[in-house]
Image (tube, rainbow, N blue to C red):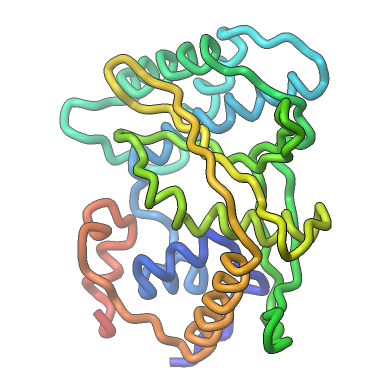
Length: 268
């Protein structure tokens, strides 16, 4: 096969999809197949994200935000997504339960959020990627969007990603997370930090407990961490150009929206 629709950029979402399953990457980003369904957890996360974005945008503009404001944003996004594609719910779940869960999580957020000085919300970036050791350049730009840029009381600029989760994060997963490493690669360029300085990053996580929790996980990335990620990007880009789109069966198959196509595909 000859794939002509190789994306003209690379993002963390693409990288993560390729690492989880290269065949899914092909279905999603090259063949651009329609999703056969969307996991409800993904819809919940998107709606929560939209509401939190509204909170920080208002904060940046010195506007007050009520819990009702956030719930309205959440509801609009939730039912918009439900109307666009079939939702896949866990046993006993339905849109009304997802809505109630989301409202409780946003109430927890509003009661616990303590914003610093907001420098940016949903900050888009496009970055030319170069290996600092060899000079090798990625043939497409890295693009992304940082949820929140905040300056804390100690003067540090922190790059933040919002998450929803059914369980607490562990320290190792936060330290190794590639999404935050991708952020650090851009942050080092955009904020002119030297090779010796570390980039401060954070996950703000709303736990989907019966009684929701709002947790913050702080971490840092060095110049060496960023360069290791650059080398990974170069290798993944080469694999995509070589059309290495093989299936990777495992836990990820349960909620994969391309299962029908996977079973039918001769490569699978």
